[in-house]
Amino acid sequence: MSSEMQETQESSKTQKQYLLFYLKEEIYAIEALTTSEIVEYSQITKVPRMNSYVKGVTNIRGNIVTVIDLLDRFGLGVSEIGPKSSIVVLHYKSEDQVTQLGIIIDEVYEVDDIETSNIKAAPEFGSIIDRKFISNMGKYRGEYIAILDTQAILDSKELSNLSMEG
Image 1 (cartoon, one colour):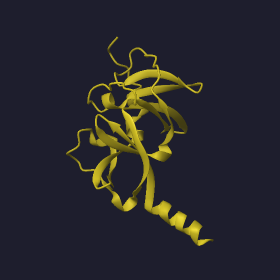
Image 2 (cartoon, helix red, strand yellow):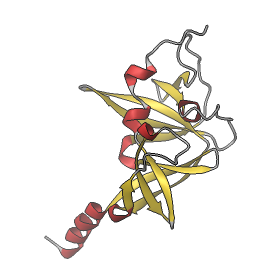
Image 3 (cartoon, one colour):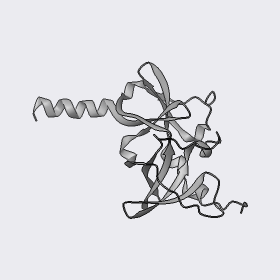
Image 4 (spheres, one colour):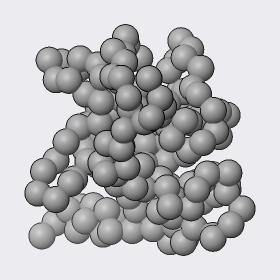
């Protein structure tokens, strides 16, 4: 094996690639491999009787994708849609099925690597969002940011609970 290939394999073991994004002026991260694509925010069709954070569905390249307001999911209010708002399409694994769901974010920051040595367990307290939505904390450019657990955020059993509202 060439030393260049070996170096690439070793570096992929010591770091992971993350999508970093803004949500209410805070930077969060999700593993880049869980994302399918990032699209400009587009019209969402409301689905009645769903939880408030399930904003509805939208058509992305011919696929109907359920869209979640991440800020609302965290109980921090409702996202204000601006010119940089986007929908990040994520892969969600439920039993033996993989589905695509979208999350609304304020703005993409960048895609970058975080060294595995800079990833620590999330504390049990001190975060503005529920601990169940955070998989780890990653040190990025000297600051710790929450690495989100997309499986918990997109939990299909929770999302499919019907709302008692209209």
